[in-house]
Structures are given as C-alpha cells and as structure tokens.
View 1: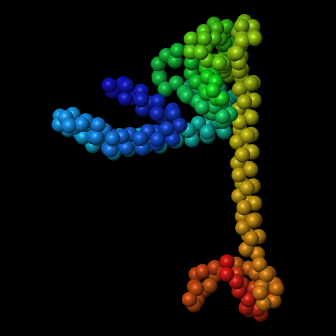
View 2: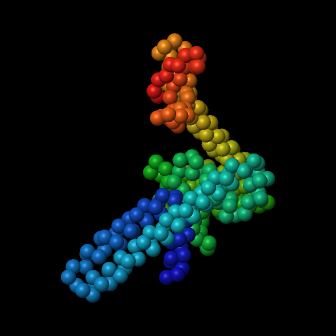
View 3: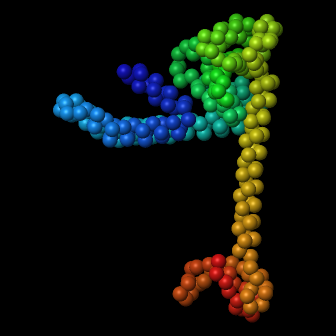
Length: 271
C-alpha cells in the first residue's frame, strides 16, 4: 500500500497543479457530506463511513500540498528551459532533467504533457502528449557520443501500434544513424536531433518573451488610458487639471482633481 500511495503522490507531482486542487475540493465534499449518507440504516456501515468522513480535511490538505509541489516543480522546469542557451548547456543536464526539458518545450506548444512518474522502466515511453484529440508518444535519449540507432525507433513504432498512438517522437541531444532515418521515413515518426531540439527551445523561448512583452505593452496602454480618462479642464479657467490629495479638512486623504494653476485658480473636480 505504501508503494501505491508513493506512486500516486509522484503522479500528482508531475500533473498540473490545478488537478490536485480539483481533487482536493471533490474529495472533501464527497468524504464530508456524501459518504456518510449512503450507508442507509445499517449502523455498522454508517459508523465506519462516518469515521472515514472524518479524514476529509486531512485528505484535502494533502492534495493541496501536492498542488503546491506540482506548481513549484513546474516553475523549476520553466526556469530550466529559459536557461538553455546552446547544446553545451543541454549536455550538462542529467537524463531526468533532459526529459523535463523536452516536456516543457512541448507543453509551451500547447500540448498536455504527462511525464513518466516511475523511477523504473518506462516501457519505451518517457512522455505522453495530447493535443487536438491526438496521442503522441515521446522517447528521450540523452546520449552524447552514441547515435540513436534503428532499434530504438523501431521499438517506439511498435509501442505506438499497441497503444493506438497517432504519432511518435524520438528526441536526442546527439544524432541518429542513417538506418534510423530510413526506417522513420514515410511513417508518423519525428526524429528530433540536437539541432532540431535547440531550434524548438529557441522558438518557445522567443514566443514566451513575445507574450511577456505583449502583456507589458497592454499594461502600459491601460495605464495611459486611465491617465487620459481622468484628464479634465478646470471648470473655472479652462486650464489642465492634475491629481491631488486633500491634506486637511473633511476629505483629508482623499484624491481629487485640482487646477494646475493653484493657488491662482482654486477650481476642483471629483474623480
């Protein structure tokens, strides 16, 4: 049972954080309010289910903690991807970090990415991608000196057939043998070598930077629009009004529009 619980926690850690939040809310409602009412008139079952329902806050808190862990790990993956400058920086990653890097790159392309949560054999698949109803299986090979041979590509193709996947991708830091390229030709298989991987990383980095710049531009425009919207002319002299704050009197601390020519002109207006 401990191993199953450990596997479940590992799975929640690699899933998006909001899934754990939804599970926490659903679990709390079900255990706290639904479960105690489904036992009927049986006293023994009712007492047993009532005891389980008392665990609702503990289960909910545990799931919320896993949501925090998932969010933190997701932040780490984003930072790791942004730090990649060339193949030399990629080569410094270990095999697990390499898988996470590839997963984050595809995640930024709009894929739902499910990483392999097990520390053991991955069955030939490291990442499962979903987008537009398609299932894509990804095998990552962080091999620096050795080329990825046709055996690896052929194995993934066989797994695709057994799992009814639409496409397969083999990603490596290095290169592929000619036999591997020949086998993949004409099949729903993508071979991503080091150069293609860096092109993908640079693309998603650029898109992320563009999104941030666009967001900052929108914020600046909103501030400009707000500043423009409160610009009025003085009702007494027609001069420009500026934002001021009352220091004394009944409205001390409140903001108002005052004539720019104060104290020559004492025209005011409410915001």
